[in-house]
Length: 87
Image (cartoon, rainbow, N blue to C red):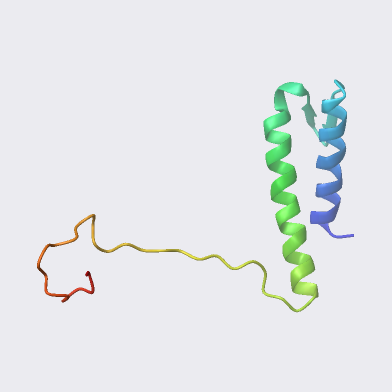
């Protein structure tokens, strides 16, 4: 198993324990119900890393992201004659 897989398993175990009202220790870190948001965020991050490892092992580059840019700065100039593609 990889470090990411090991850490994911630890965070899943911590989340389950804390949801049952128990405390859980990962190394020197003592986790309680008060840490549930942090535990969930940690689990999600390690899950993301595991997913990337699996994708790489399967010859995939991982998830793609799309960013949309709006260079109009909120302007849609009237009567621009289509110069900027606004109709």
